[in-house]
Length: 332
Image (cartoon, rainbow, N blue to C red; front, side):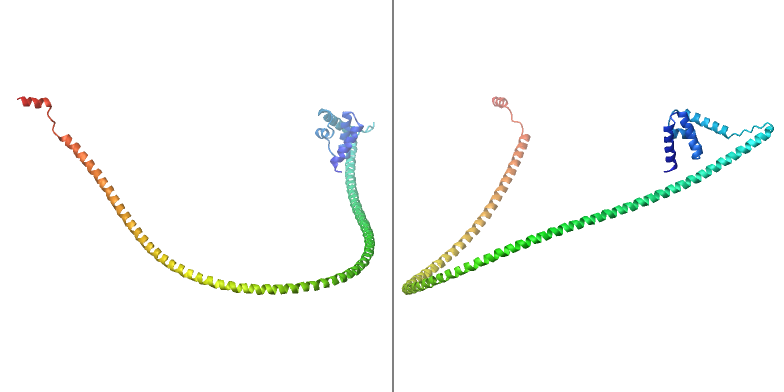
């Protein structure tokens, strides 16, 4: 705790003890001056107390200094001492009082510093103890966590052991069931062997019958093959005749195709000649058309020139006499 906080705490305690404003300011002046060695001022008093008007701390401060001077003044009343000696003795006693007060303040400051150092050391020791307590608490928490983990592992191990025991019991039961099934399968295998022997005998009988049927079928197949061979020979003869006729037909077709190709070539040549003639006629027609257009343009031009000349002739032609004048000339 610093000095300001300590002063404020002591002033709060004085507020509870002294309800009167003037008395409270007087006690605060004494607290600041004698205990903390601070020269009180009106603004500082009001800053600490904050009670009453601004004139209250000023009045309390003036009264405090007056009382302090009265207490510090030493009066020596002796009937036989001169007045100058009384004043000198009073000044000496006052000086001694001031020195004693200053010494007391110095010792008080030293004690305060020592107390603050001890307080700081105690606080440091307390913080160290708190740190050690926190470390111990952390260690305890860690041990508790490890204990909980061990308990969980133990429970897990017990559960695994119980699971293995149940699995072993289930395996034993399955083994017994499998042994029972093996016995049943062996009995079933014996029955299957007996059934297989019976079926094998039946199969042999059926195979012999099938062999007989196969031999009969083979004989029928040989007869059918021989008959088919005869029919194939007759068909081959017919095929040879058809091939001869087909070759003759192919020769005739080739001859006709050759004639058709010749005719096609001739017609192609004639078609090309006709196309060339058409192109020539088209070019000639285009030339004649162009000449006709040129002639029309020239005719239009000549017509325009003739119209122009006709208009010029009409303009420069002399006027024709009227009919009355011609009649008069006839009568004369």
